[in-house]
Amino acid sequence: MEIGKIKNQNKKGFTLIEALTLLFIFSIITLTFYNVIVIGSRFIISAKNRLGAVSVANEKMEIIRNLRYEDVGTDHGAITGKILGDEYIAENASHFHVKTTVEYVDDSFDGVEPTDTAPEDYKKVTIVISWNNNTESTNLVSRFVPTGMEVAKPGDGFLRINVFSDQPGGTGIPNSSVHVVNGDTGLDTTVQTDSSGSVILMGDKIKNSIKKYRITLAKPGFENVTTMPPYPATAYNPVDGDASVVVGSMNVANIVQDELANLKVDSVDYLGNPIPNISFHMVGGRIIGNTIVTASNPIALPVYNLDSDATTNASGEHDFGSVSPGQYTFTLGASVSNYVLIDTDPVSPLSLFSNQNLVLKAKLAAKNVTSLMVKVVASDAVTPIAGAQVELKNGAGYDVTATASSTGIVFLPIDATPLLPGTYDLKITASGFSDSNSQVIINQNQLETATVKLNAS
Image 1 (cartoon, rainbow, N blue to C red):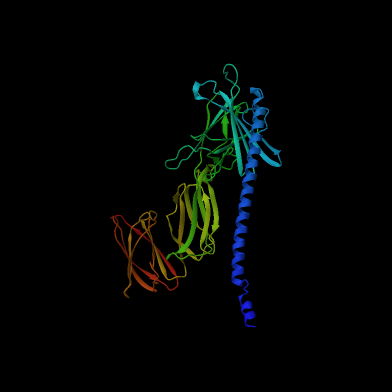
Image 2: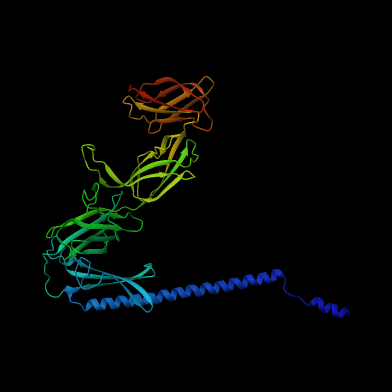
């Protein structure tokens, strides 16, 4: 009997912890093998699609090589020909988007325009094959040279488009997508700027046409820019008007395309605490035109690409995201009745540059708080006096001096210690101006405002 008991004690099974550990290890191994299989399958499919795309590109290019030089062109490109510029092809159960562009090249070997009177030296054909919703692509480029002597084509026009940045240190913008359309000539083509930010369109679809060439620029991280027709087709005089071509002339369109910036607005109190749901108006960014001068509007004013009413959220924030660089002006919304604007940081209007991440803090004062806002101006009642010293004191021991901002404004209190209602002495001094001494009565739960004019000394 004792021996049987000993044998039973030596029979052991898996504990719960051991079973869970084994299950965990098995899960990791299974998941690892699954990920390897998935990633491997993805690479195999991608490689298969890429090989198929290369095959389609080679087949397409071989067809083009068998065309006459005069027929090497697209249905909507600058050069008329027998090639479809945009098509979809199914190959081995895969679907490919095929875009073909044909461009004339002005080779520097024999000089360039305007010295070269026959700038259409040869044709460059670019075939771009994309798949997987255009997230993957490959391309093939080839040159086609005419036989015989180079001959000028007096009926073909010439349009150079220069794309550049006007930001500090800005240069030409390479690899910007340039889409050019002219319904009168049948032109509808997309090309890329070269390393200097230029593109040249030559061909039989570049014809005499005044202010009809619509140009659209696009590049990731940069402004989207589109030219506009002249007034009155556009409600203002556009800065970037549709381009014109006069055959036999040098036709150049210069267009600014800047890298984007980021702009955010925070509405806060004088201590920097967020104030939610504040409406405001923001205008600025790229100047896209100027208003029309009329009897009622005798001065042409700039028209900006951002002109928006907005409201901060429950956290006192509003994020505009990516915006054009330029000058921006902030104003408090007309519906805001319980607050007044003390100041903005940075001061409005402000300058925003490419690649800059800017947070504009709109500092507000509640009208139902015991406080004082003083604006110090020159004798013209308009020019603010920045740096003026504003001293506020009373007989109960309160004595605080604050410096006026660039807008000439001082808000008191300057910290979490509230003002008490009563009569205060107000002294203001500023270099080059006579001192000002006065008294101000501050009432309970009320914002008092005062504008003080200083005379030049």
